[in-house]
Image 1: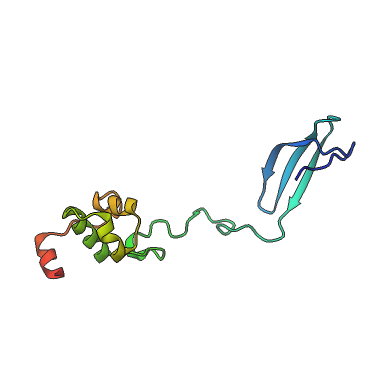
Image 2: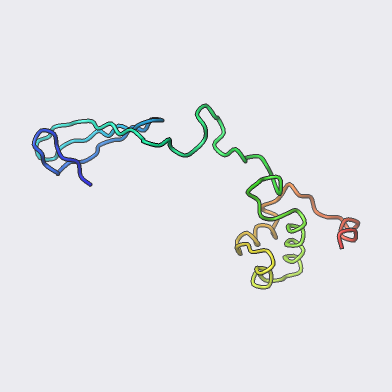
Length: 130
């Protein structure tokens, strides 16, 4: 939607820059026909989603690794099972119904790129888990 020029009522206007603040934003607009410039101030009727004011962390779950993160779907035992399936050479299509994850995630878990905070299971750990 084009803004109308306040001087000549033309719709040939362009936003040259926008400044965003916590409770409003300012758009600096110029008219292509008469060359006049003006500013609009748009206030938000609802607060914007995001971190609470004064918070320094954007993601409050940052730093919670593995199953301690509330957004995690997989458990530590699932990760060990996925790693074992990857090491055995099972394809993603053979594993996808059990865990419901994307093929790229299966690859990253199998290659130990993600979930690196979990140590490798030793032979003793594997026998006790079976």
